[in-house]
Length: 376
Image 1 (cartoon, rainbow, N blue to C red):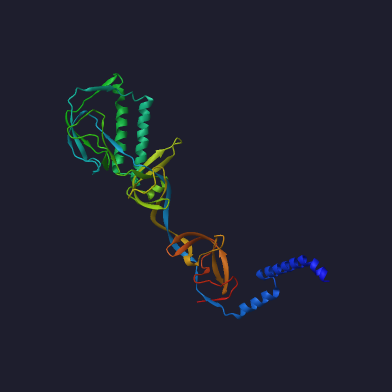
Image 2: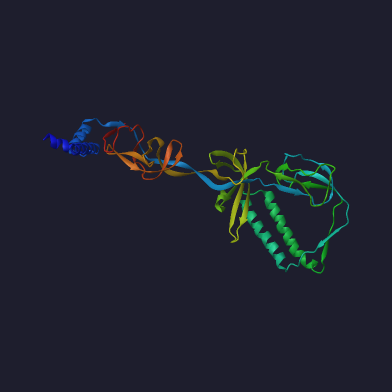
C-alpha cells in the first residue's frame, strides 16, 4: 500500500492542486448555488442604501466654430514710389503704426518731360474683355464680403477703383486703336506718398534727403509680428467671422488669443470660392514655427440645447468606456453612454440616455447592479 502511494504521489499531488484551483474558480464566479443563495439572503437582510439621484436634463451648450489652419510668415505690404525724386520729408519711423491714407513721406519729384507708353488694346480684344470681367467678378465678391462685415470699406473701394480702371480702359481703347503710344505726364513738385492700408512700418529703405528712382520700394507695412495664423473658412462662416472678431488659437498644448485682421477670397480652378482668414496673434508663441498646424476656436455667442448629466455622475470602466448608474424602481442599474463636451458642472450625453432618466450623482462605493436603494 505504501509502495503504491509512493509511486502515485505525483499524480495525487497534481489532482489535489487541480481540485483546489477548481474550487477557487467556482467561488470566484459564484458557481455554487448555495453560496449565491446565501449572498442573496444577506443582501436582502441589509437595509437599502440611501443615495442621491438626479434626472438627466437639458442644458444650453455654447456653439463654437472650430476651423483648421497653420502658422505662416506675416504678410508684408510693400510701398513703392511711382516717381523719381528726392525725399523731402519723412513722417514715419520703423515700428510706427499707421492708418490707411496717412502720409508717409513727401517726395520732391524730378522735373521730366512726358513719358510715352504703349496704348491700350481695342475694346474688342479678348485681353481687354477678360480684364474687365475679372475686375467685375472681384468687385462682386468683395461687395458680398463687405455686406457681411468681412472686409473693410477701404478694400471694397480699392476693388471698385480697379473695376472703374478696367472699364475706362475698355471704353477708351477704340480711340487709342489708331496709334501705338499714349502720353503720361510726370508730376513736377512735391508728391505725397500715403499708406495704402493699415499697418506697422517695417523695412524702411529710404531717408530724408535721399534720392530714389521710379518704382523703388520705400518701405513695407506689416502687422508687427513674425507669424500670423491663416485659417480656412467656408462661406457660411462669414456670418460669424468678421474683421476684428476675437478668437482663440490652439497650438498643441498652447493657447494663444488672436483677432481676425483680414478675410480674403480665393477662386479655385473649378470657380468655387473659399476664404482665408488672417489672424493677428496677441503674442508670439514659444516654439512653433511657420507651417505649424493650428485650430481656430470662435465662440459664436449662440447656444444649442443638449442632454447632459452632472459630471460627477459619469463613470469609466477598465476599458475606458463611459457609463452611469441608473435608478429604476429603487433598484440600481448601469447604462453605457457616449460623453460629449463639458458644460460647466455638466457633461453632454450624445447617446445612451433619454431625458428624465435618474442617475446616481453621489457616492456609489459598494453598490452593485440590482442593489436596492432609497432616494434621498
